[in-house]
Amino acid sequence: QVQLKESGPGLVQPSQTLSLTCTVSGFSLTSNSVSWVRQPPGKGLEWMGAIWSGGSTDYNSALKSRLSISRDTSKSQVFLKMNSLQTEDTAIYFCTRLRIRYFDYWGQGVMVTVSS
Amino acid sequence: EIVLTQSPTTMAASPGEKVTITCRASSSVSYMYWYQQMSDASPKLWIYDTSKLASGVPDRFSGSGSGTSYSLTINTMEAEDAATYYCQQCCSTPLTFGSGTKLEIK
Image (cartoon, rainbow over all chains, first blue to last red; front, side, top):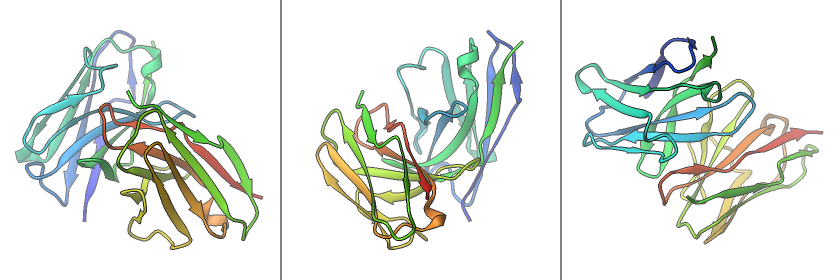
């Protein structure tokens, strides 16, 4: 069955870089797209960006200067890197399978706190 | 960026009551998508392509709309429907979500 699982550090210092990994199973990254979506505590959902099945990427313009999404298809992994983290980047980070227009499967999410 | 405005922000409904949540888009979109999020859980796809129920979604739920106005309706509220519901537009990047409607059971 389709599964996505996020992993990464729970705590990041301000101004540092966040690195997260999404490990997927039950589908191929060469024929499916993956997105990252985040949710600050008690708030709504924000689409961050996507890596399409062909390997191209799209980013939310609000984050584009700080964000990079890549993948390793042989390991079924998608990576998120975001630099210059601030306290407002504290959030649950979800990876999702993206069906062109919508998100049909979500990982459990990983809580990232930005604090010194 | 297409802004989605959901209403109401919060509401409480009694068992058996009909519930309607609306989502208005700042520009016309072709489809709307809805997600259900329980407390401390990941969102789940609930309605896709405006009116199609995702797998496992009870048929008391329905979706409708076009252009800039969409809605999610629960025909008869049940306790298990208490959750936060988000709409999402498909058709212009950045993909955007509404701010959510928290639905509680009375």
